[in-house]
Length: 109
Length: 139
Image (tube, rainbow over all chains, first blue to last red; front, side, top):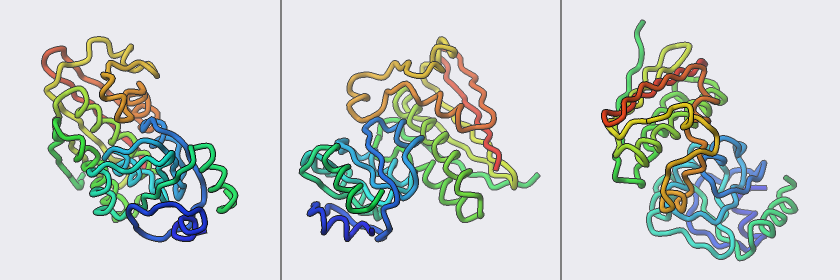
């Protein structure tokens, strides 16, 4: 399932958009060193971290989208950087576990 | 041997630009047709090095030399130096402040990740003078 379809079906907020790719994996985490070394390509990355470094890490790992959980919103610097780099940033009301279950069910990952 | 040489200033005061050098090298390697697995290793190792310079050393210089079969990365700073390199290499050990941790860094995985994803890594550090890290990643 592509990111746009996931966002629509799960009713996630859309903070920024990019290439509409298929979500092929999922990864949950907030420590950026863990994420860059372990998150698989084309994953949905679920986190509560919302600063500008999230955009840099998302680019390096080539994730399909970032999902900010627990109603976390991107700060101004992250929103600007994600928009300029063409990174999907979505927002979920659920906690990371709840959102991960949604992504797993909808995307079959 | 001829190589593609890229040089970057890493701004030590600016977390917003941290990762720019790694991203640029990653893009260049992709354009040169280097395998995605190798590109990923370079991106991880170099990003960790770049972040270390921002967190610990007020920035510095990142130089990438791209050869047909490998990349050499030099990360040079004039920061405080590393007093105990063996300790700094230990997974989970970090001197990062609480503020840095709140940004998602400071897991003590920077240097271990750089070692894990490179084929060769040397650290030349003098306390009070600075640190140069060399990373070689084979394609």
